[in-house]
Length: 139
Image 1 (cartoon, rainbow, N blue to C red):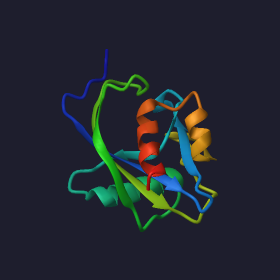
Image 2: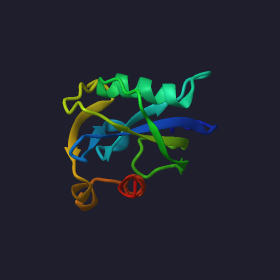
Image 3: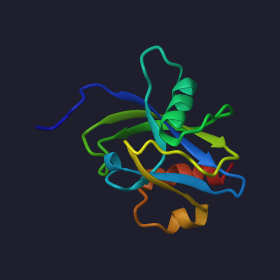
Image 4: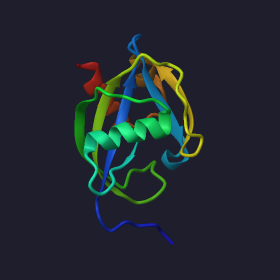
C-alpha cells in the first residue's frame, strides 16, 4: 500500500557552504541514495527559520544563526523520494566555519563537501537540486 499524504507538506532544506566555497551534500535512504541537503518538515506553529535551524542541528550537528532564504517552490512526486509527496519547500543557505559535521546516522547516511563544479558533474544529483545550486552559484 502506498503511503500517500493527501495534503501538501511544508518543508525546509538547508545548504551549508564552507569558507572554501564548497557545499555539503548528504545521502539519505529517503532520497534513494541521491545526494541531497539536510532538512525536513516544519512543525505546527514553528517559524520557517526556526525549522531550518532545528533541522540543521538535528541532522548535521551544528547550530546556524545566519540563514539566507534562497529558493522556494513546490516538488510534487519526485522520482527519487521514497514515497508520493507534495512538498512546498523553502531552501536556505548558511555560511559555516565548521567542516566536521555530526550527522544523525538515522536519516542521514553520509555527507561530503563538494565544489560546485564537482556537483554539476555528478550522476547521483537530481536536477531539482542542481536548480538550487544554480541559484547559489549566482549569489
